[in-house]
Length: 139
Ligand SMILES: Cc1cc2nc3c(=O)[nH]c(=O)nc-3n(C[C@H](O)[C@H](O)[C@H](O)COP(=O)(O)O)c2cc1C
Image (tube, rainbow, N blue to C red; front, side, top):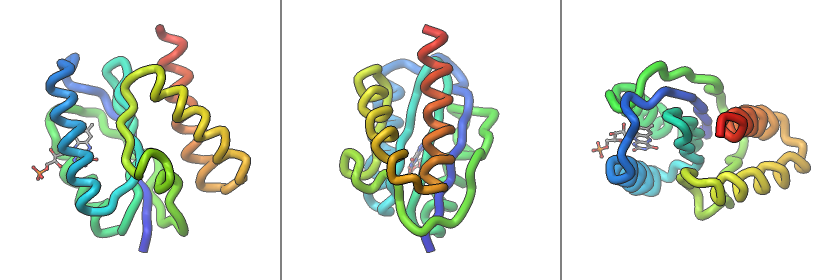
């Protein structure tokens, strides 16, 4: 059974680039191992993450993530079973988004997805697009 979890959270401290790179490479490595696809966006001290994959792996991964003291105020926005993944074909599965070029690429991918008019995809797209829009407005 496939599922997806999408959450937002606040970074606990202004993460250094080095600390972030370490976090990202660990996330990538683990997610590849457990066949978890999705995105992790870090912007302006906030995280937004979409995880998708086998229920057992997504739940176990989210449990580890939710116990991580590097972020807080973790708010699960979406937590549902899915028929298919949204990010499987995007950048080989799991993507870290931490610069404006990546954000633009993601935006284009989401616009392309939106045309497929998948209900779940639209929910995830709206969530990610809102997050991106807020971040862009602040800077
Ligand atoms: C914002 C944030 C996102 C994370 N995303 C992932 C993730 O997608 N996959 C993952 O395995 N760990 C992720 N982590 C790290 C986990 O909290 C945890 O440190 C890691 O999974 C432990 O892996 P290990 O048991 O192999 O050492 C994330 C941590 C934070 C703070």
